[in-house]
Image 1 (cartoon, rainbow, N blue to C red):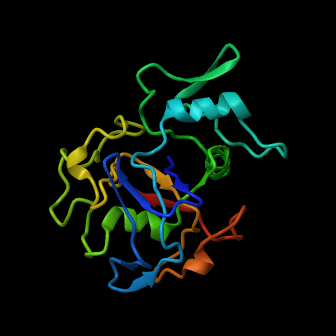
Image 2 (cartoon, one colour):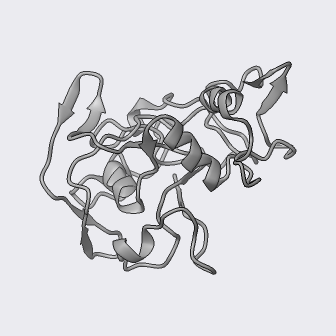
Length: 214
């Protein structure tokens, strides 16, 4: 699934009622070291992109790029978006679930369609953990069913935004459990080197997939 950031905004979006700005931030890593974020201020979506939202993109732009690069795996049994007449629509009951089977290229195209972009891994972790070195978005308490959806069956997802007790310090939801999320950074071991890990339109050979477990 995916979550977006704005390209040119000057503040981080916390909630409908709260916005704030911050100076160049230091992200505390689980391994104990820190990195400096290159993006000083940015918005990030409060919840992951849903099947219904991604279906609107597919109806407007199609399922692949002009060069044939697939944006969505329409033939996979786990797909929850299907064609209905001339439009793509989320399956009944899955409209508000996080979108799955969207490729990284599809995620990038969807972001561009909205004038946004994927977050870097560092931005994603800043949204999830803040600056106090907490282990989970909500703090250091062990996960429970009121904070995160985990330990479920394959493709057994829950609607986005349904566990407010699991919110991050910035009131961002669903940053733990419920699925994997795309980021723009290639997946490499710590220590994170932001310039090496942040990619453009295509991953370097053998660099791995650019996702974060949430």
